[in-house]
Image 1 (cartoon, rainbow, N blue to C red):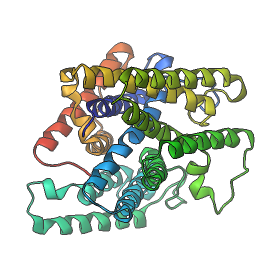
Image 2 (cartoon, rainbow, N blue to C red):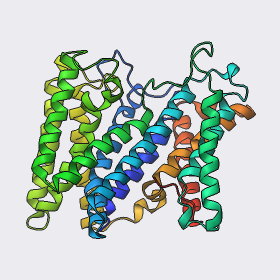
Image 3 (cartoon, rainbow, N blue to C red):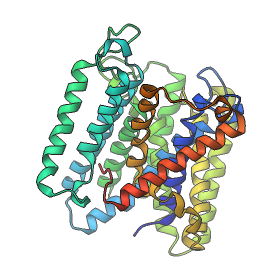
Amino acid sequence: MRIASIDILRALTMVLMIWVNEFWSLINIPKWLKHASASEDYMGFSDIIFPLFLFIVGLSIPYAIQHRLAKKESRLLIAKHIVIRSISLLLIGVFMVNYESAYHESIFLGKYVWCILMATAVVLIWMNWKRSPVPQKWHIYFQITGFLILIFLAVIYKGGSQGENWMETHWWGILGLIGWAYIINALIYLYSKNSISVMVIAWILFNVLSVLNQTHDGIFRNDVTRIFSTLYSGTIPAFTTAGVVATLTFKKLSKDNIKWCYVLLISLGVANIAYGLLTRSYWGISKIQGTPSWLAICTGIGFFMFVLLYYIADVKKQTGWATVIGAAGTATLTCYMIPYFLYPLYNITGLKLPDFLNTSIIGLLVSFGFALLVVFFTGWLERKGYKLKL
């Protein structure tokens, strides 16, 4: 069973993610649209997008796992799929993060060609070749070539202020953080056997860890455990657990009394936002610091968005308005990767829009148009049979 509201929410979030990623290049745009800095007690529109995506990952987990169980797959096989998928996200995330800190002059290809090759390798490895028009005999060769490219890129990599560093996990990148949130929540859900009680306990635990991470700085941190910091700091996985709880609440209550389902999910939204605002004086609202207040407010927004879009798309069947961005919800990774080809090409070719097209409302409209073009191209690729799948 596919829930239209989840695909639409994923599509909207993906379009907005591409859009807000353009804001750094724009001039004279409203502050409320941009990311807050690390020192600000503040949340801009851009600071809401990634949490929503993590929430959507959680919304999808129960449906994806139940679909596999319905096909009589063993839990061990599903767990293997979860681990491989998560490691893939972590691997791609690490390469993307190191592109950001690459020292252009020390890489003999230059950082922009390095990025294009990285994106090409991702396409070669994770393209769903079985559904593509490419003959099966070539699939394994493409994937092997992709892995060889990644190894080559790792060997030649130079980073840091003077090219003195090799690849590092400065942070895990957007995809890497999704990978951590996905693996812990998917495995808990899988082995809890659809238990909403277990998922609620996990959600509370991650929120508690988020508080401890703010109030007892360093309590968990050491060189050995740092690799797992995304999990034990609580904030990132908590968004996804909240999404799982939302789906399980919906599945358990919607068949008997949809109104009570709405009431409960909206109440959870109100409670989270109220908690976030009331605790702001203790921790502040900060995406970069991952504060509990930011976690709570964005989680509350996630509950509201799910209820609203479910009512519009699944109850009232009003989905035509979202058709234009549908590919961003069904071929999300493909959509996310396309800018990693385009941005380096802009730098290599020196192409640049006139300043008036990067300024104020015109710049925002042009950037949003760019996001839509990426989605349209993704849709065209999907119709031709080319779609990335982890």
